[in-house]
Length: 162
Image (cartoon, rainbow, N blue to C red; front, side):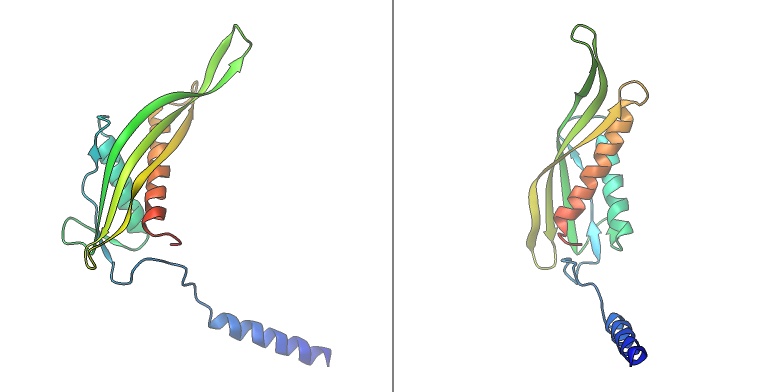
């Protein structure tokens, strides 16, 4: 009798899992091609517009969307509003304090439009920090970390639950 019960439970688990699929995505089914033009750089940081744009294009592409130059099903516009370097962490005594890490703060205004339905999917301001060690890493490392994090935030805000 115990073997039969185990067999029934196993069968139900296996067949139940066979019909399971994840539908947690909120991406509209008609959006397959996304237009991501070069980001505007109101912060005036050399090369940051290209770095952010490349990161966004790669991230959206890895998620199965085609990144196109024009005529996309959706349009993502990013404007870099702020970029600054700040001391993140200090070490040492009161009169002998040194900065041990910095953070790069990046703020981006995002507008994501469904071009087919003519609907705004996301509009807002996002920000992120990339921290780097003051003694063993460069500002570029912190900047790259901030760009990677803000790109992920933009994707998450554009398609919540994706």
